Length: 206
Image (tube, rainbow, N blue to C red; front, side):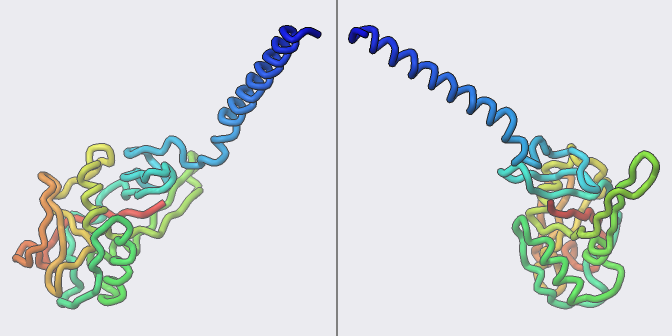
């Protein structure tokens, strides 16, 4: 075999190898990737795990779910007395701990954090059988509440004007948000008083 023929032969073998490699990679991405992406396709406004998706993080697999409706149109943050609960988290991911701290400090009663903590939502099939049950709801932190405000159109069901967060400001006031303009307050004024009656929407993480 001459030099020119050898070069052509090597080029053909290389081409076939490259084409086979491309085919294998194409099949891998077409058939294999979905197995590792259980959360693929999740989006804000989608019904999911007992509520409505309010937020999806960068992985596409985790985020926040809002209850499908308000839990109250007017309920106190406090349980009848002013105490420091230590529920000072304001960022995404702190609402659960805030709620636990509030309930631990304030105990049994009828107030925002306890209402969310006690919430249980069942998902039924077409035969009305319970197929899923979710009991890990909590009062959102300030920034989690802001996510609900920003995506309120996709989530739906908001009927209140002011909504409580689980973020405490001091012994007698806590953060809340105006759901008509997005303003957030915690200046310790009368509007922030923990005994004010504001709306509540519970969330849970997934």
